Length: 200
Image (tube, rainbow, N blue to C red; front, side, top):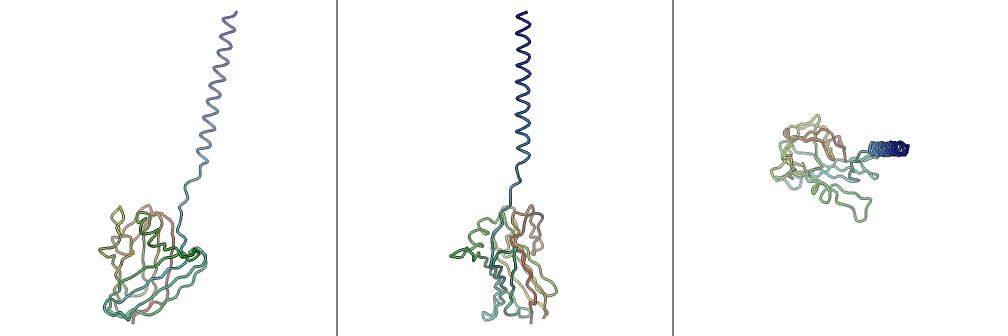
């Protein structure tokens, strides 16, 4: 009888131990499933300035400014000053800042360029004869694509249209083979369209 009693207690203890392990595994599995996916941290950009400088005429510049006091997801104001000259070539300089900080954060030089592997500029032009190439000394990402901070623009015949600039954060894939650039996935740090751009 003692043997049966010990055997019975051993069996009960073993079942309890196995049950406890099963419950612990189940709880652990559930908590892993509840872990939220990582959130992409977008840059806070309030001011964007595109300055196109005529490489043959220092007096001719086109300045496109976008101001979004609460960041690019909020309301913004776009202004275009100056016009392109037909058949002229321009060098583009970019300035991206967060003016909610004092002094203002230089987002382009402090965040975007050092993290070129996590960013990519896409450009587009509509209804006008304006082309763009990424410069040979543009910033190269690890995948070989050029970031798009150093570009050259050529104005063709006279006309009026739109210029768009988009900055994508952590794209799944980027491609600069058509110069303008394209991406898959990621999130937009900014997406700005300037209207009423002129070539004269």
